Amino acid sequence: LNELNKTIKANITMIGRRRGTRDTGTSFISLSIISLIKFVVGILVIMFGAFSFSIYRGNDVKNLNGPGSIRSNVHGVAVAEDKFVVDEVFATKEIQSLREEFYKRYGGKGEANEMLNRGVRHPESRKIRLPSIKYDIPLDVARTADRLIRAKEENRSFVMAFGGYSITVGRGNFFQQSYPFVMENILKDLVQRGLKMDFIVRNAAIGGTPSFPYGWCMSNLLGDDADVVSWEFGLNEGKDADGLESYVRHAMSMPHSPKFLLMDNLKGRRNQRFDILKSYADNGANIDSLVIDYETAVKSFVDKNGVKESFKNLNGFNRWNEWGGKDGCPGKNSWHLKLQSHELIGWLLAMHLIDAIEIAIDVGKDKEGREHLRTTSLPPLPRGRNLPDPVSKFDSSTSGSSLRFGVKSSGSPLTNETWKMNTISCRTSYDPILSGDLKDIVLSGMVEHKDILYDRTENLFEKGWVLDVGLLERNTKIKVDKCGGLGYIDMKKSLYGLATSGTLMMKIPWQHAEKSLSGLPIEGDAASRWFKSLTICEVNEKRKGNPCKIDRDISFDVGGARVSKTDVLSFTGVKYLGQEICFSIDIPPDAKVTKHGGEFVLRVDASVQNTDLTYEGACSISHVIWENV
Image 1 (cartoon, rainbow, N blue to C red):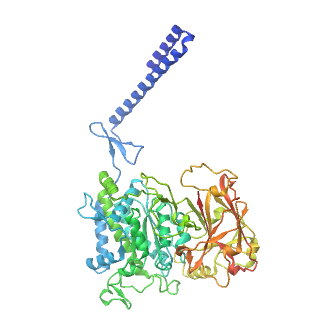
Image 2 (cartoon, one colour):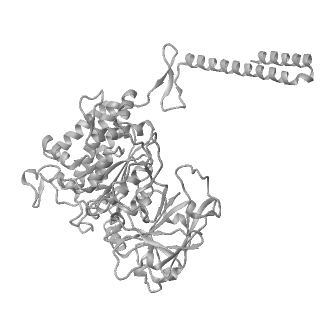
Image 3 (cartoon, one colour):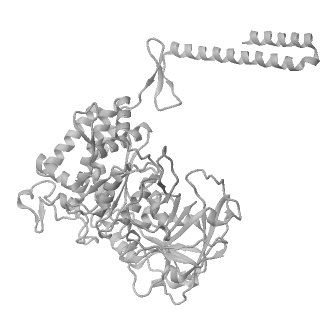
């Protein structure tokens, strides 16, 4: 290259002397052509040297374009190395051992499998055939297997995140005895040693909390990395299904469009919620949903008098009436599940997932097998933010309709886009959360209680809005603390305010999951251009007398303008014991975007106007949800 460079320089000098300064254009063209030749020759030399070195060394060279690597074979030709490594021997033995344990616990293979078929319901009824497996595979199981494979290919954990009410929390038992952790204990070795990947289970259930506003805050509570999410609908939401559909649509809009688990009491029949999940499956939604019908599962073992005599010695039923918590501890109510009921649900979930793990290990060994599974099992509707048409009937002009079901997009024949969710953000004071604490958006006007489990005084409210818990929540937590806490991590904290508390000032940042076609906000822009809706929810709790109502007793300024309209959101999923808890706050036409700390925000100020309220009926704010345009 050095010699070539000297020769080129000499030729350029000679050309310049011969042609003189008047022919500089031709000289420039000659120089460009020669420079191009120099560049190409140099690249060829470098490529040849690198290739020869890799053959000589015979070592693997990392492929920066994918999870595999490049290695040299005996002929010196580069080939891709597949990094999908599993321990098939261990996995096969572990799967066999777990199935045998399941059969032993629940009356033998026949009885146990019949219970499994009763208790695990599949809204997706289709099956597929794979070349390496000699029997038909349920389509939802195949899709779950693909989720496991994707997580391994992307070198990340497989995450299952559970939401729900007090049953899922495990009230009456220790938190670690709840069915999500029972399932985790059954499967952890199989996933970690067999599939050689991390396995994370989160129980983010909160006692006495409806599916909304929880469903708007799934990223905060369940995590954006979730591969599986759940909700427990059998206890507080009756037979209605509109809350379920909204919850599912928000789940589908999460980054991994996770598998959905519904805990429900079908009593062996289909209900509206099951039918919605079936409709989504029939329309190509990739949620491989599953319904756990616990009460139907045990009907051949248990009747109104308890466990039938012939099953009392089985490991799954020999302590059927025992709680996991200590004597005298709270939560041992008739609607909560005892220890072996949690164990049974954990086993039902585990046996379903074992089928998917077995397929993932069998198919995952071969790259072509993985690709065949993916192309065969995935639905025509793309993953991600694209949604099918809603099943529930609703008026799109009403407050909160886009927050529940999304917006209809123009779409195209290629993308099949029909509906999608706007980017929805949440800040909440409830625990447990992974991100998005309500305190993060408070600018001023908040005071924290020194000890949240002891009574507050009315004088504390004169210092600002108090981060605290309600009377019932406090009394329950004190009882649980006397039992050592039982491991529970849920708590319904909220900001409580009176007229004497002054103004609570908050900043709502503009956040968008996708690059906006309109660019970025500018300070002074009309807020309605960037924020479609604003919703504020109060804590859901039993309260006596005539407590505060957000739409009646709080005044709001949004973007520097006074709010004149506040609408109650009224659908099954957003009510608690018949009480509306969430309100749509109007964004005035003259509300403006401002800049704070380098981000574009919408200022929201709240102040209590009702001077007759006492601290027992104080106003509360526990969730702030906004819909970005």
